[in-house]
Image 1: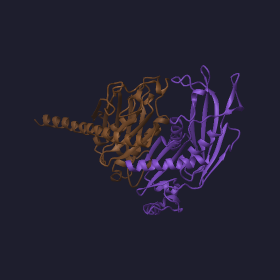
Image 2 (image 1 turned 90 degrees about the horizontal axis):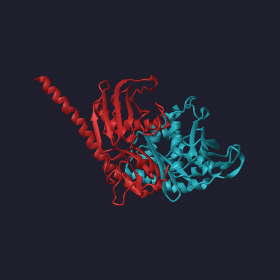
Image 3 (image 1 turned 45 degrees about the vertical axis):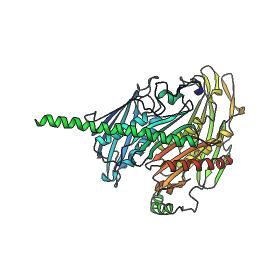
Image 4 (image 1 turned 60 degrees about the horizontal axis):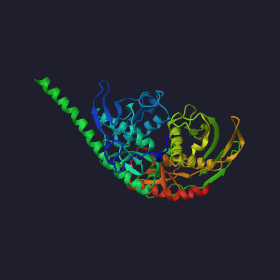
Length: 250
Length: 255
C-alpha cells in the first residue's frame, strides 16, 4: 500500500477525485419497504454502497434471557456479504469488526425507539451490506432507521449518519472508500436531527480540537441532507400505497 | 451485580449534584499504579491498577506472513480477555462483544497514532514481525478501557524487539521498541446528565452511555468511541476532549 501522504485525494481546485466539493454527498437513494416478509425494510444505495435493512418485531424475545420486563430489547445485526468488497472473498458471518459495529448501531436505536411501549418483546434489526464503498456503518444506520419507521415502530427521531474525515489535509463529508483508506482520519457520525446530539461517534486518525469541532459541524450539515432523503423515501412509500388504494376503490 | 444495581438511584442523585459515592470530583481518577515489566518472560509487559481495577498487558512478537494488501509491513494485533476470575458476569466461551470492543478501542488509538512503525517489521519477502498485545482483565472494578490502554502503553514502552537470525527469533536479545507517540484514553460515563471520568462498576450500571477519547502528546485526538444509548452534544464532546488532553499528560507521567 502506498504511503498515506503519497496520494492526492483533493485536487488543487478544491474538488475531490470524483468531482465532489468537500461538503458534497455521494448520490444517495433510499427506498422504503423493499422486502415483503419483514415488518419494515429499506434499501440504501449510497455511492457504490448497497445496504439492506429489515426489521422484525416487536415480537417474542429470543433468547429468553434477554427479556426486559420494562422495555423491548433491541437486537441489531450488521453483516457484510463475502462478495461485498473489491478485494478477495471474505468469510461470511460476523467477525470482530462487524460485532463491534452491530453493538454501536444497537445503541443508536436503544436511544431512539420508544422501547418502554413494548415490554418483554424484542425488535430485531437485520442489516446486510451487499456492496461496500466506505461508510457502510453509516449507510446501515440510515437504512435501519427508515426500516424501523417503515415497520411503524415509534421513535423519538430518525437517525441520520455521515462519515466525515480528513484526507489530503482537508475535512471532507461522506468519505468514499479511497478517501477512507488513504486519508488521514475517519469519523463515522450519527446525529439525531431533532436534538443535534450524537448517537454514534467513532474516530480514528490524528485530529486537533479545532478539526474535531469543525468535523462535527460538517457532519451536522451533511446529516440534514440525509434526513431529507429519509423523509422523502418514507413519504414516497405512502404515495404508492395511496395510488394502490385509489385504483382498488374504483 | 445486584449490589451495583441497587445503588443506581443513589448514584444518579449524587451525580445530579456533581458528587460521587467515593467522594471524588467528576473528573478525578482513582489512584493509579503502574508495574512495568511485570511478566519478564514476555517481550514487554505491565500491570496497571486504577483503584481496584487490574489489567495486565503482555507484548509478544512472532514471525508472520504480511497481509496481502500490505506486503511490506509487519502486523499489530490487540486482543482482550475478560478472564472469568475478574467478575462474576464474565463467562468462558468465545470472546464477548464487550471484550471485542475493549480490544478494538485500544487498538484504534495505537494504530491511528502510528505509535509503532510496522514498516520496520519486514524481515524478508513474505516474512515480517507480528506484534501482539494481549490485555488481560484480572479484576473488573470499572473503567477497563483506560486501564487496558495504559497497560498497553506501559507494556509497549518497555518492550524489546527480538533479534531475527536464520529464520528464528532470539527473544532474550534485541533492541528497544521505538514508540512514535504515547496514546492514553479517557472514558466518561453519562450519569444523570453529568459526565463522570473513571467510573466504578456501580457508576457504569447507573450510566446511560460512555464516550472514550484516545489522545496523544501535542494535543491530538487519535480515536474516539461512543457506546451505550446516551447521546452527547457538541459542547460535551469538546469538553471531554479538553479533559482528555489535560489528563493525558498526567497519565503519560505514570508510565
